[in-house]
Length: 185
Image (cartoon, rainbow, N blue to C red; front, top):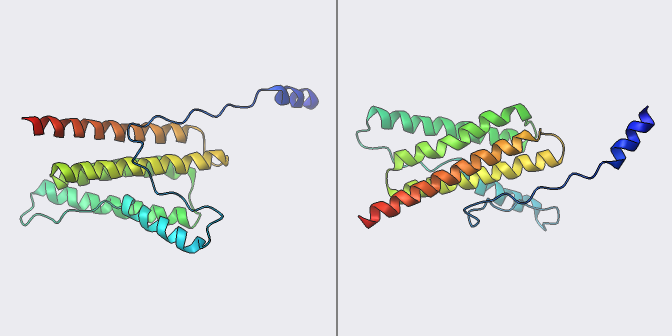
């Protein structure tokens, strides 16, 4: 019976790699990951880590002189979300990441830049926050794709990451369209 199973499995066609995922923003990319052939691996990883820290932690605008209760809550929400993402980045860096962390991590990553954009209020500042969100979502998609390729994450995680990345791109497209419409008035 096991010989028959082995023959049947061997006769199965190899899984075809899916086509590259569509993106409306091909120029918005996460920083390249250092390769194994870097002359100074430590410096390359330090540069990557610094670039990722800037994406993970949205830049907070200065708090208003007399913030409304909503502004105060949003400010604290961004701080808490950024702290969570930064701590999870360190969990990843030391190799303690578990697949069950992914959905929660993705949810916070998808929301923290939106809240930061609401706090900023300027059209240019909001667009920057939404662009950083797209880049972060692309990095998370790349991260989980590599883990899926290594057979350590379930395949649905890549679909979930792609769904959130596409939502981030849709939100950015809407924001840019609104800004253009407001500029034409």
